[in-house]
Image (cartoon, rainbow, N blue to C red; front, side, top):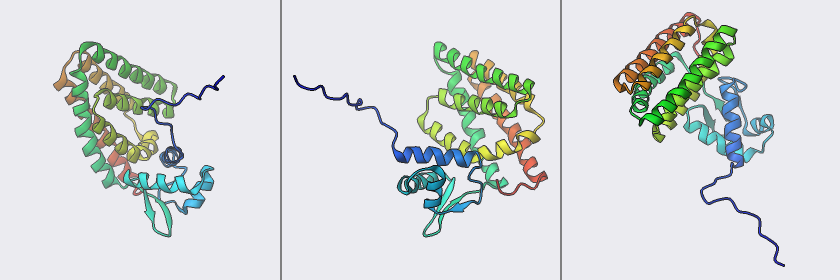
Length: 234
């Protein structure tokens, strides 16, 4: 009796590789400041810290350099890039433009998809409100990030999603660092609800306007904080 062959993954499936694992681990360490801005180390040292071999770390570093998170220095290792206030200004220019477009696209979805997206966004907004009431700033930050990620993903534009993921990875440290300094957390929840209401009502221009105004206010709050506290490299 012939032995059955082990099942093979579908052609469309792609198993995570060691490089994917190294990329995810390094990105998380950068976002969480375990690898702080300005930190420089050899590929071997980083591999040891992550419990990985050097080759996937090398390949992952090349991808992270394309994302603007590290610099690969020949014969000198890997440098974790810092973000300056002027970088944050440029990042917000992109966010303001693209999230407005994303909100308008979501408001233009067919009704079942539009309402499903609005419900998903509302869940994040309510999680933000609950976290704020509990004084749990890390949870507030995660729910806020979830709201904006969902807004972009529901727009269904792959290129927009990739651009925003890169931008968000670059700005994450600055947002988390200044979270305890910000005094307008309730305003963010209110503005998120305005975006959701416009999406439910299929009001594309309104969703665009509210998303744009929300990010402009966030920029105008964050950048002065960076200057007031002398945060030059994040």
